[in-house]
Image (tube, rainbow, N blue to C red; front, side):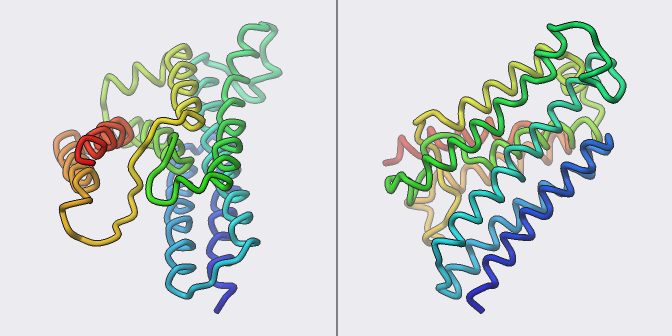
Length: 240
């Protein structure tokens, strides 16, 4: 029983690796759903560890290693592919250009796994983040990326098409969410200690805002999830 959380964490890692393969083969929507599966496994491994009281130093380290792959490397490769498409490059993209500037643009997603690794290292050594976060969690970083891919694939939003069609916009987006991971901005933890409204104001507001965005905009509302998360975190601070 004590190995169940580590097995689930391994499923997180496996999902992230397979997501990378699909992304490299150009199937960004399947890759995004696999990253979503990795998020579910990331939630379940912690849930099962608490339920079974099966905590271990190995499990903690394995969880961080899996998160770097699934929520750092995999979304960065999605960004790399989006950049290549926005620049109308064919595979192998980075060797199909003689422009040093384009090579730099294609390599810009490297900041994402680097910041994800730093974020996880800080989180593992920071005891003040037990009930709240400082900096954007790595799963939220991945969600920010896959929400754009899903919105592009399943909606006809002109705004999303404009974003994914602009290399400059993609690079700016990448740097913003990557740097958010290593900031000390206090952000809301989504773990409910209980179901009471008091103390969970920000969490309930976030749930309601996300549901409203998805009902109003459909899949095109997915990219609003992380901005709404930031807003809910600010609201949560006001209730403290």
